[in-house]
Image 1: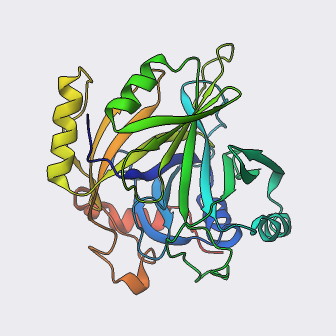
Image 2: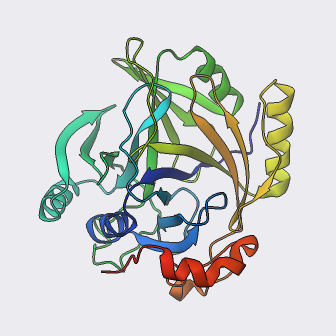
Image 3: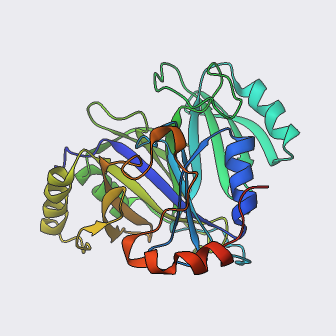
Length: 311
């Protein structure tokens, strides 16, 4: 069994407007933009990262905003909901704040005994704030949300699948164990000490059609390992188990490997190193346009053609 995975690393989704995406995460949710760069494979599209102060693995929400992209169609074979951890007793604050920012479909519920506030992002993205006891991660408060209520990082992701069989085996191989079931939702937790972003839920929907990706869809979910040595050990274990997986890819701020899971969700294993301050001082993360070295020659063109993000 793999024992190097520490929990979630980041979640990457798609949007259709970079400016609205930035406003939502920095102003409505109070997260910090820790990196403004471009898609490695489509440099005319931003890759935006939102997180805590330093971009700590387990707190990082990232987006590819493709201008004018059609909305995705929800379905099975995708991450349907991304959940953030907030302190106990803070949902009233968030309910009011989200209302002030005209955030849609804000609703309260409870799952596995935890009070939650669900809502939609600008492209219909599914999000939840979960009141979590004892989350000691230090929040970012630079965008005006107090430390007593601010987002700590991820709580979990919830995947919509037609069944659990293949994913149950894979998550077990990756060091997760099923700890609870409520209705059609199965909850898995990383064994041992995680990074705070410790849970994965599976919502079983056997009659739902497969998802069609677009704006508002999660592109992939990444799991954290400490370093490249741990990543190579995970890759060897997965390959030995018959999982087709990519070579290691340098993503500038982490190293990545990718594989498609049973049911269709794209997984990534990402390193905690080197981090988002490798090319920017921590006090100024996310301010300058940072380009992968292979796209640096496009800087003048991109600075003229990429959508302005700031209001």
